[in-house]
Image 1 (tube, rainbow, N blue to C red):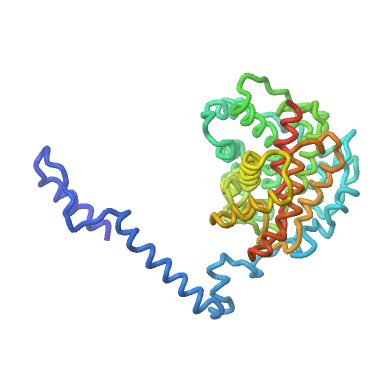
Image 2 (cartoon, rainbow, N blue to C red):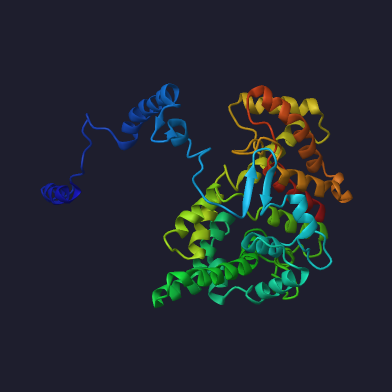
Length: 416
């Protein structure tokens, strides 16, 4: 259709006298005006479909599942972790407390390393301290960014959101993809995984330097970045390059935080995006960058930033010495304004997120954090919110985002 209309349009335009602008006829409408008429009708149509046919089965699937984005459907094989609605996450059968007991920490630390969790997720086996240490050393050897990447990242405007910069940086790393080079050269399908693995390891190794450089450029452009220390684990180097290597609490928290986020049953938006893109044989850099852009959404990875904004607004309005009643009133104010309470509820979990519990227990074990008004606010909100949200008819339990960003903000304030 468009192929036939283009020559006609060109013919009509050639007959328009020079200097005469194209006019909008009184009876015509802009695209926006047309959509303003169409969209309400479509919204009503969808509402009616939900009301009258949500339980109707199409094939073997209910209409409510089709509309709801496959929620509740068994449509994917996943081995590394399982998310139980009541128990929470298990990694190859291990709970979070199990992992904290058996996965090796960094030298001098207590929390499991990202490398030991990575090893468990890929192999289903708990690495020995020596295996974890050797793996850290292997990644440290690959950790430095190529010169072209440093130049590229430094050229990005400081006003560009860090997550956007991170996604762009990861995609650019595919310049050196071993899988892409091998595929173009010609390899057997049975060998794909070996080259994919090398790309994955290279990406994991370089992420700390890439993220730290973006952080430096955006927030502390005059600061130098510490070089990669090949005797440190991934997170130890990351904390050091961020400028917080002296802060043992933050470094240990990041080890726990990153390990806990290593996997979450593989079906969330960002993981699903990486699988979808990877199924086209895009290399891991491109697949992971796509996942990062899904993660950047306010209903996904940006959620802890939304929690931070909301809790800071609460503190600004009701002060630092807040009571449970103050918080209850603010929660109702949020809900009655038509907004959601960020950091509460989950698509699967029907109990408090064990990741939230693990991070809160970490905070409780750190005396220097107990005086933070922000940390206290998180705890008090978690004590009040479930009853309010139950009364409102919502999933009432805190998820990991209810505390993760708040801790980072609080400990940064203490450090400075």
